[in-house]
Image (tube, rainbow, N blue to C red; front, side, top):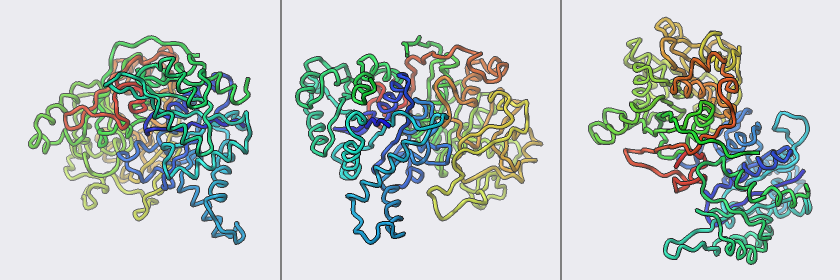
Length: 590
């Protein structure tokens, strides 16, 4: 097994995850099998209880693991299926060591950070690296490891020590370290400054790790004299100093690395001695994203990716209009009429509407309003998880005349609970207590749009993350009024997919289809939404969701446009600039 470690210096948010994913793409293009591990130094055992505002989207894996959003990048870039153990956290490591200590596995020894914690980290890496993730038998050839945080952080010190020991343990030729650092340009002098990277590498070397490759983030390509300076002071060959400058979207990054022969440097470091530039799309498709966390685009990273994958196949340039759900509510009309007007203009100007998942009652009324607008005006609509429940609540209120209909999550005393807490859920513990991971959905209506989009499948396996479900006792009432529950679980009582047959495309899913969307293989329901929004749904349905028959794959979405609005103002992504590939890790801002 060969290992590639990606670390970061100077500041966080430089794009280590995209860099690690792109390195994996290069190695895969060289004919190697690749797996990935993400190390997060925080004490949480997983990302399940962390706010999207705090840490971005919680990505859900097939086995129900709630993990860092970078694992979503790995799965999309490399077309692999990871496990919860591919995300290592300080909490997981300490928990495993303490469990061993309680069992007496250490035979009375004093349990310490070194060697017990560091040994546990190394054992975890070696064990997980051997797990096949690409559907083939046997372990991968290379494991790409991303160390979260920044070199010098106190919380990551045990991992740095462990990885230093690990590099010695696996030996030369089996370990390659790529250090992602920042080369800023001061506006005053316009000069690319190398000092931050020099200090970062010095700190890394002082901790026992020496980089083989420097991946330097900058607004523009590094000057040759800057590369030479970095090479001299960081003890890295000049040909191993690569530039990761700002580009329109993240799919350029593997090409950028390839053009600078980064793969040759990696293969050389590991003793292991196609892509083309695509057409640019011009016709746009506008999708309104009506959500609660629109102030941080990373909160809906996988949804953005799924929209992008589908729009590429439909040969449309994606434009996402961010609409804060609360801005559509009547209270905003009174308190901030300009914000209210702007939100409605964005919604009415869109070709389709997405209401993504979420938790809590903030913005729920605005989401209900958006669902009603899409239903009444025949605008293509996709509701995901909570978004599906919102569509059900709106239908109950508007069509069934049950004006107080609601979810017990938002109104425990409602007399018409059309969405209820699942019987097996826990109301006292939050982490890991939801219905998580891959579950099977059976289509009850074979001729429905959703089944056709999935290739006339009788069932599909998709990933879940929810505590609440549609009240099965009210399903007959809904169906008699025209809302069709076309998919359910194996019992037939837990509703999974809804459709409005009288609508061009009004679909809701209890599961999260975005988590399994891939470039060239878009999620079926997202493909349906984009196709409906761009007037191509009939062609897609005739081809039973087979995108390769409908349109040629391998098209780039060029430079998609995403405008972000929060209370009527443009917002920045979590990582600062809206320009370039690393702005928010999704490649859809400009």
